[in-house]
Length: 173
Image 1 (tube, rainbow, N blue to C red):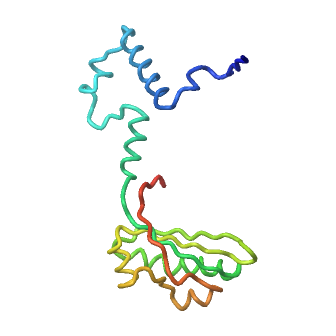
Image 2: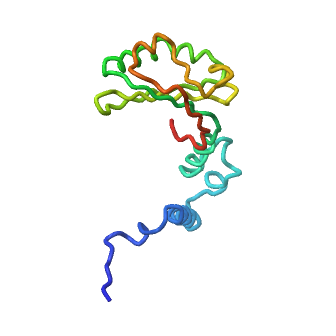
Image 3: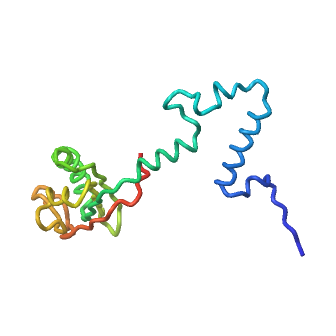
């Protein structure tokens, strides 16, 4: 039987959570053995000022907890020439985005582009608080695409319907 040896330290082979636990345990052990550590003042959580951060792991957890919000992503696609796509993006930036930002429940938007088969594919994703917010923008048939005449003139074709997806986890900054 052939044994392969890793050049990595044994700790590097542990899952991250276990490794993090070991680091915290080692840090606590140092405090226990350090006669200069004033646990009453600097290490005791009760003695810390309010809002004191206890570590990176807590900060990451808090950030992820804040980002676990619900919402709706409304996705829609279109095709255009390279020039038409650039013009549509400018139209979106200059006219549509400011109008959308005034609507209650609108959180923002992404306009994505990709060159594909001799045309530019555009995907627009708008972010909303709820389907009620979407209905305030799209009307009683929220699954229908809302494409202004000015935008239609810049596009070769576009999807007549949109997709609505619920945000399950948001890690964007």
